[in-house]
Length: 226
Image 1 (cartoon, rainbow, N blue to C red):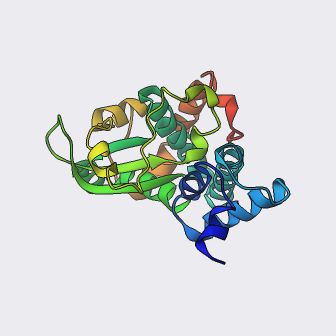
Image 2 (image 1 turned 90 degrees about the vertical axis):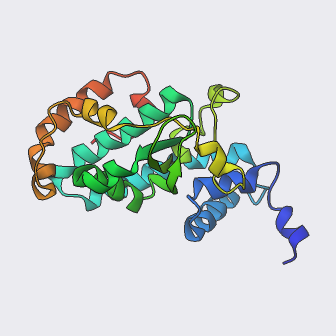
Image 3 (image 1 turned 45 degrees about the vertical axis):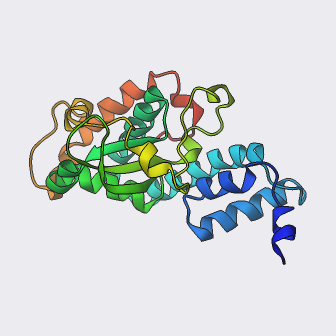
């Protein structure tokens, strides 16, 4: 198959959106592509087709996480997903920055981010980045496209950085920062202890967080209930 034939399989920004929806993982991109082609009788894949698929794709990943995680950590992982999604939607961007020192020194938060990375619910977008207006180094994370791409009403007011583009690194240097204070606001009674104890002792608090999140207007837009 030549380049021209491949291009005919997509329309508009379909290919770029498909890569973002698959988190840049070839297996996931191919799987989504085959699903899109099957669902639309082999028609060219465009932005709208990917928008629909991205939601169900994210839901599958979260179901996998819930299935594989222990009962005493499941609620906290789900609460973590909502925390990051809520932060990005409130900031109107798909990228957030976390201070390097938090990821290096706070094992509990590092563990949470790593679990969500493993299930491709968030994606690593950069490391050792500097910010244009704040000192220090940061890690950049992108929330999965399934968290926001299916909201048509967000177009033209939601800044979506395509991490595959050359200019992405410079754009990410202006992304909002999820500070340690923000993280500790999420879990105001957060216990400072060894990470091996973190999930079990935080379960009750996580359930309270989830109950608050369920009251938010956007909670029901995805099938993520624990």
